[in-house]
Length: 260
Figure (cartoon, rainbow, N blue to C red):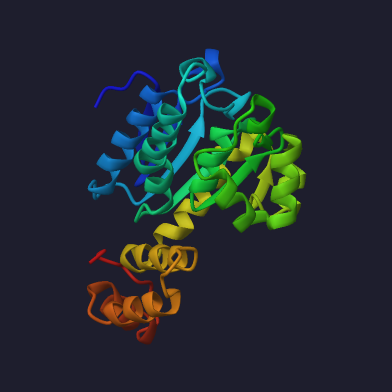
């Protein structure tokens, strides 16, 4: 499929989605959010794709925020719809995606950009990365899950400080806060993320997908995450991947998972 604002590349079962609006520092507008939704939707049913990496074009920005010019004159009703649609189409969609999603954060990840990175299953940052949720400096609050996911990752106190001050933290602070898993030099970012993706792909894709769902269940109100885990664990025994994994272990060989 042809896109105006994003680029796609599949190599060794890794789909890299690059937000490509360099003149706008890859800011998210409605069209880009829709294109990202379409790309993830297609990847969901593409058996060639086992891991998704999301990043921004250039060296300056992952995503520098939302495109403010699009909603500066919105009414309260329009603002609410903007947040609801964005969360459904992209941010919650990514968070609950059945295949691993890794954010390769290169440069600025601000506002909606940090919210997109936080929706990914985990984050790896370049050493020039800067992150923050500056929405209150515009008279609004984070609307794409920022007030929910940031406290889950860094704790309530740090999230309160980051959001209320509208300040930025650098890559090393983000690592200290557990907002990112690793910090690497910018030139090494893609290879480092691809290496981790390669480690993931050695394992059962079925089991990894179930693990994503079980982990996410812990953060859903009214959902018993332990119950989700127990049920998923039981289902694993009926998969071809379980048969292959246990057979390989018992016979002291590397598993060749069929992904079923």
